[in-house]
Every structure is written in structure tokens, then in C-alpha cells.
Image (cartoon, rainbow, N blue to C red; front, top):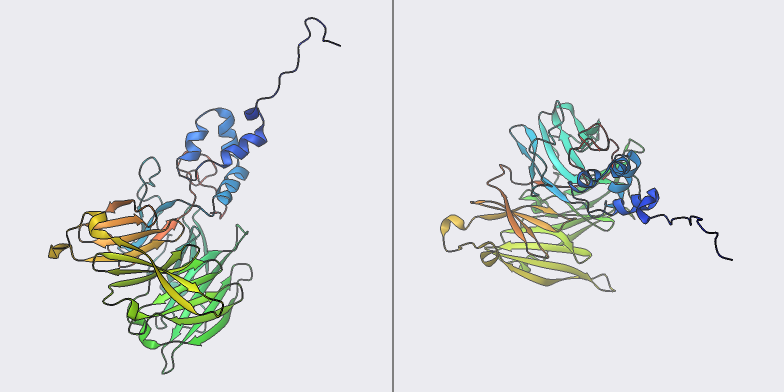
Length: 383
């Protein structure tokens, strides 16, 4: 039976009139710093959705596995500075992430999952700092070791599926006749240190300062570069420690070696003269590892260098951003970043006065007044 004359039929709701659906759409905006501020400017309703603290938390968690590369942290003049790497409107303003107050006599040790790890020598403390929220966690250095005398590397990681807790992993090298690597573990849940394991390692593998670790799956890897270069592997899942010799005959006259991610596994980047080689580790059913050369990158051609000029011969690797697969190179003419898949490159600054830098990969909304009190950044420790 038809409707009576003049009766109004219900109007179907438009998709974007549904707040839940709108939230899901906005959640999938790119994780660039300008994305949320631009969307919030569309209308009051979108602003209301985006400024909700719950949405900000979900947005950062949603993009946790693909954060943008915001910049490079490095030490300068007794403080910590961020060198921005993105172009406007996504570029982080200089001075946006300033050093924690009271920081003196310190060492910048690592940066991962939006957290920065610092050895604060003057306080005999370790500091884990979230630059976006400015939240800080301080705790005593493990009593078994003296910070200024024991060679120690370290890193910080967020607990999988947990937005509020983190873990710190330290590797201490005992300077004895029979040197050993000792792995220590700190959890913000338990607030205690545990010595997990130790293993012998060649003492002459520490002739040069090691690059920061790389996280591949559930394992951390450090490459110790020297006469007997080795890769130290810490499996966080089964709590095991292994030392693997690096076949140096594969890298004759190499200027620099660095561990990296490679096609879902472990890789090595080698730099010799003006050529980068990317290697991938393969492991067969008998757990025997071999290394396969996957790519050669000619920096002469890529960066337009002139290798015949003596002034141009200096080139070094200073950082690797594991989530974005980007390597940073220092030359006399400046600091360059190269995306190792697309080979897109850019010069980010004239110089950074430090040998090793630490890429900062995290989700951050530019200053708009949305999402909390800290210049638009949410106060919860998420990334």
C-alpha cells in the first residue's frame, strides 16, 4: 500500500553524519604532523572529534608501526637538540623538543618508539624521556656497574600492546682478561633490574664506538666494530644472548659497517669509498648463517659527488632510522638523508657536531591547541 499524499519519507543518514564512522575515517589520516591540525580546521564537528583525548590516543596507537621521521637527536653544547628532517608544513620547529631540565654530565644513548634513553652521570641515574609529552622516568643505574668506568651500550623499547610501560636493555662489557658481555634488563612495570645472561666476546671488537642497536622482530642487534667485528644478538622473547662473528673478508677496506633491517630480517650496511652495499643474512635449516649482497648504491651518481676531489672524500654514516629505512651520511658539505628503498635523498643541515645521532620516529600533531596542554600533544606516553 502506497504512502499517503504529503507524507514525508525518512531521509537516509549520510555516512559522515555517523560519529563512529567519521572517527574511523579520521583515524586513517596519514601520521604526518600537519594531518590532524588540517582536518580539525575543516569544521567544528571534526575539531570536536580530533580534539578528544581518546581519539588522539587511538591515532598514535594506530600509526605506531609507521611513525614519521621527525628528526635527529644529538648532543651539542651540553644539551640535547633535535635537527628537523621534514619539510613544511610537517617540519618540527627548532627548539620544540628541548632538553629535560637539570640535565648535565650526561650521555645520549638511544632513541626508539618515541622515547629517548639518557645516562645522567651527575645523578648516577638513567633517564627515559618522552619528548612529545615531556614525561620523564628516572631510576638508579644498576648497582653492579659503575657508569663512568664500565663500557655500556643500551636501548629503550615500548612493551608490545602497552602504551604506558617500557623496557630498558643494557649491555655491559667487563674489561677483564676474559671479557664478557652482560645483558641487564629493566621494566617500568616492576621497577627492578635483572641480569639476564652473559657470554664471552672478543675484546678487540670494541676498538670503535658502536652504532645504536637495531630491533628486528623480537631481537636487538649491536655490531661491535674492530679487528674481530661481531654482532651481539639479544632475543627478548626467549631471553637468549648470542655472539656472531662478522666475516670481514666480505668487507675489504671497508670504512663503516652498520646493522640494519633487511626484507624482514637482519642486514648489514657497508660503506666503502663512495659505495654502499646492502647485505641480508640468510639462515638455513641447520641454523647456518650466510650473507647475500642485495644491492649496490653508488653515492657518486646518487648525490652528484665528485670522488676525484680530495675535499669530497670524507663520508661517514652517523645514523639509521629503522622504521623508515633511512640512512644519514656526513660529508664535508653537510648532512644527507637517503631512503634506501626509493633512493630519495635530501640535505638536512650543514653539520651536526657529533659522531653518532639518534633518529626520532614518532607520531606528533603540530601545535594547534588540540589534544592536550603540551602544545597540542597528548599527555599520555603513546607513540
